[in-house]
Image (cartoon, rainbow, N blue to C red):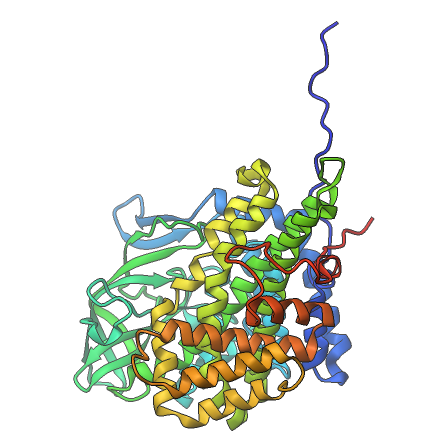
Length: 547
């Protein structure tokens, strides 16, 4: 009889069949904090349903399939006709359809809409992050279109619809549509004012034809796109549909799909406008950046939320694995050094989630103070949270050891996804310089930001010291551009500390302030002071699998 050598022991069960929403205490507490009492039970019910779906086996399978079978470009049909079609695996459509039907493009149409959508986006993105791009673009197109009431009246009901229709058809025949964006060009990159795409006015008011090339077009299978081009009056924003009102295809030449590091399930393309590409002007000529910046601001919040989702899923996987994995005489999670690592990761994740929800609540508030606060808080948060994502994902992967380096664990996909949100919608330097512009030109924004962080003043001496240090940095304008990253990092961490001191359990706030503001930590994760209540911090981050 052959010896049996393949007995499997000491392997954790898969993290599946759990509620992604209710297992996340920072998220559930944040939703309760910001959603009106009259709607809280309704919102919790929606998010629990979405959380159970996100943690299910079938959603995890959809994510694996969508990334294992990335989109395929078909420029021509079998007869040689130009079709410029992108084919997706059915799993992609299931993921995207579930997002739309659960209201992740409908924030603008509901009370408490941004908090409930941000929470839902954070939950559902943990099943698969790539399909979040068209979800984000569709959501963010609404404020840009509102600069033109006629266009908003036509398109907003379709953009905020809960009906997902994947086929390209005349927009008038569709209940729900998706939006993409095409801003950057190969010669300009983030400097969109260097764009060379031309817009020639037609006889009909507000109608143009476009000629040019876009180096990076998000979600090229969408129904409409917001595009920047040089009109006679300067750089201008345009709405370009894939299908024209008469049912014919607009000229929208997809040259190739990008072969990206991560985000494999999502199509990103280079596209060409050939002089026959028809578009409608959004806003005034020469006001393109001011018009589309409303879309960019909304997508930057999604970058923060998307990074928070990657962080949360990475931490959940690391805590789950170490709960069941035994080494050196006991569960890994009980080992003091591993507990330090996990607690440090959990702190970073909770700070990111708490900040994302605060930004969403400010969007829902909508008042002048909220708008001024967002002007600084969004780029600062986008800079810092997305920067922290990659290092956190790498450390969480290491908690699984060699198992984490294997594709089947799902951790490599998280690690490849982690840098994306730091680059898209403006890389780190772009965010830092945007903060400097606001500091120099919009004093009301700084007042609103300082008012926000000042509400926690006196609650923790390390936070108070951090606020004082920030004020010192802001008072010294010499060499401010070279110091911009330092300033923005401090703004973000002080804001996170202020939020955690006000809203998080004492052990979380204490550990964050000691390490991030008090300087009592090393450069790597897992260097928290050993005197803190690290076990409580880790336990708070543990995902709960029912049954």
